[in-house]
Image (cartoon, rainbow, N blue to C red; front, side):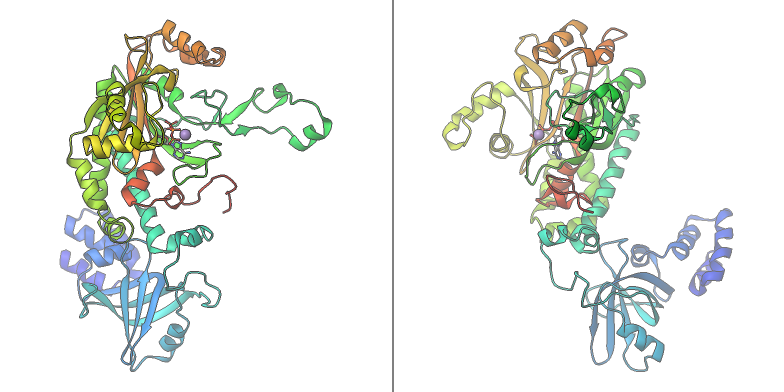
Length: 502
Ligand code: ATP
Ligand code: MN
């Protein structure tokens, strides 16, 4: 069977593919199946990894570069399936008229279909190459107006052509890693029995009580301004003020207290006017929440999670990661390796502040018990005090949100921040306050109106149980695993202050 399929594979043309598909539905051995899949998909990634020398291949993709010598014409064809493209080589002598005409139109960026035979590459750059015998131009790409020429472009410039930038090495690699990391997130939680819950994007409650939310309305604002009347939100779509969610946590807690182990992973929004390399107005957040779990369980889950994600990146994103390591952030792979292999240190906020106070004069913000840890403090703790990842716990209650469990001392809450070298905080989480009276007190103490939280409070009335969770900003994770400094380069179409083009 295998040899028949191999033969079919070698002669595979459009017509035979249908027959192959029928055969595929029958029981086949692993090797034969792989071969068949290769005929059907023929991504350059598959061709480079699995096709055998001597096979007839048709590859479709976009021209990265075209190079001519006296004897040959080289086209580097990339279809985005992998970092590396397929080198297609045409014999310059005896080129057919059709091929010559097509090649003259095959500029950088053009979409092509190239057929030929896979051979061992005589050159050092790649193991195999395509000895091409025919080429068709699927879509031309005029050289005089295509913004992505052969030369290197700055990331700033690429942000202005976000519709084309995925065709570059850097943004293409970032997009593939983003996909892999999303898959890793789901895989991690499902292996551990966590259920994926879709929490709402529109909400009427402000989770953190921190403001900075985008309002959602279908009131006619122009008419309202003209009338000079105050807005009547009873007439608004939801009958009250509504916002884009800053976090899915409060909603996902409801499901944790029913399904046990859950997580949400979706877009969240912050109208913060901070033009930094770490903040977006629209970003994705991963928020697990699990019941009958206290702070130490939460810390263990967070550590396991980070290690799993970094391990996944190293195992499955080899080429892309190697590129980032070489061109964007030297030492990246070693750093991921180190975090993956090191036991995370634990330290209370109080001890952390003692450490910081020893170095007080070297910080821009003077550390003291009760201060919010600044980025410089966090980095000093992880990079200099510990020399590796550290989980800081038990922060003063004034610094943290109302839903965190109050400690016996009445001053601190069971919060945890996971700090890693180079970035500082990567994960923030806590054990949740599960005692009704204490929670109500906390809400009031933060100056919040308890009324909109009635349903959240009820969770503490009906079968309340200790539960814990954390949040990881997906793009912050991606900044770390790609080494890309600017958060706008790890999301396809960034939304930030004054930026919503594309
Ligand atoms: P920061 O101090 O960096 O602004 P934060 O304390 O406001 O963060 P949280 O409210 O704890 O952050 O949000 C949880 C996680 O969401 C953060 O740890 C971070 O990974 C991510 N995050 C927060 N704000 C943004 C943003 N504007 N853009 C991208 N990710 C964000
Ligand atoms: Mn913030």
